[in-house]
Image (tube, rainbow, N blue to C red; front, side, top):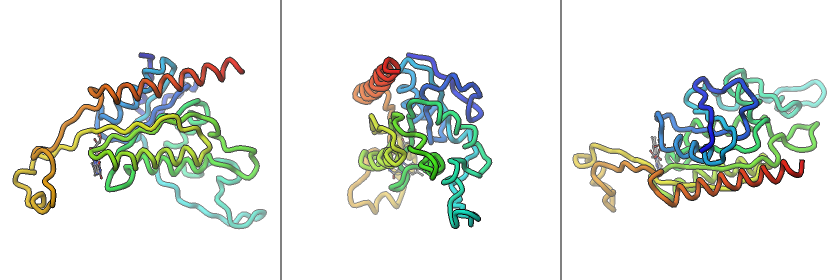
Length: 239
Ligand SMILES: Cc1cc2nc3c(=O)[nH]c(=O)nc-3n(C[C@H](O)[C@H](O)[C@H](O)COP(=O)(O)O)c2cc1C
């Protein structure tokens, strides 16, 4: 396992440490999502940094259209790739530009990727194309999308939403990892709502799962890490 920095305050200042950036949208301490993102980072053997979005204060995009004297109605970030919201996204921004690969993990919540991950993805709009740049700033960077879920179909949707953003940014999605996590419920036995379900839900206590005890998931994480490592090696040899 390679070493990685875990940033307690939403971002280490040392940019040299960022070959790969791992982001987790899960607010749960040492969650399955966190551990899966870290497994990919650690398995690359490269310098990486892990950021937990619940340690950061990041607002959603304000869709801040302005009337520019020269260009008319625009989003200001279309001129300079800078988001005007002064929050912790500004700390992560230089790392996003520095990194060669981005590993983003979230979880599904009612058919959408969780709110923290979504909010972060939305802010990446500022790094998309601007009027005076030949290509978007994130072009060609590698992307791994991860979702830890209760239902695989929902996990695929959430991981797919992360991947969708990678594609929008002209990044190269190299792996999509969907793993079953925990869905605890101590009240199912008594729960009246549960009896309304046409098909009874699995265990009455809910389910506690450790996706990192699943060999297939570990293999997928290690394969993603190997692809990152080998691709970056080839790129560096080419200069
Ligand atoms: C508010 C909320 C909504 C959720 N909705 C879904 C869902 O729609 N589909 C699903 O598969 N899991 C859902 N989950 C379960 C999470 O996907 C599950 O807790 C996941 O394992 C989180 O991983 P963690 O261990 O990394 O926190 C939901 C969890 C929360 C907290």
